[in-house]
Length: 194
Length: 133
Image (tube, rainbow over the protein chains, first blue to last red):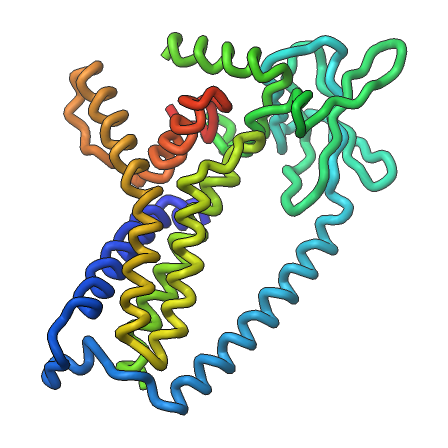
């Protein structure tokens, strides 16, 4: 599966190149050369158009069905991130770590309580699908919500990845907690650090 | 029948693949605003799909739409590739490396970083991400 995203940009560029050259030639070519008819065909026949139309309808129905199933199955995959009050910086969650505790669930949400160091390790698997995650600062006084969008946004650069380790591949999720300026400063610091 | 569908297949597959690629890059980083070039490119992919269907009845008109759509898509890929190559060359010269420009499928990462760098110049995101070196 990871091979597909790797070749995708190459494939996209190659196809784009072909499409550009082909469309340019068709747009500016002289009247039809019958020997090249297979490269530059005339309008498709009626059966072809009916076939393409039917195939499109089937594909659209399939896509709508997949979208519906995917939305339904991801309804319970929302996560609640509990971050120590005042914490700023990168938060990292490592999944499928042997010996680490599984993620607890509250209602329909996974609860990810981030320790003060900012790194949480769990034996649970990473969750995929569409869901609205929630972020909170926690302290002895309780919890308060963090904005993950809008002008007061405090959650940035959320990524999911996989890296090789001696114990095998490790899946992780990272995001930055802080203001826009703190996120920018962190980026500049990392740039300088190489 | 298959021969009739050559332009359709080309435009359709190119539209889907480029659209999907730019879409995944645009969503690669949570919190980053959608770059206008990404938006133009996505619109181009949509136009390429339209051209695919038009090509079944009016190949010449479809070719013009496809050409316009391709140019829209290049608006993203052009700067992204240039940025990727520049970044790669800068890295190579700094470490005196003689490696290939795109070893072992690094283009995905480079395109991602290029996208992020464009955002970064606008002061929105950081290039840290995607497990890139």
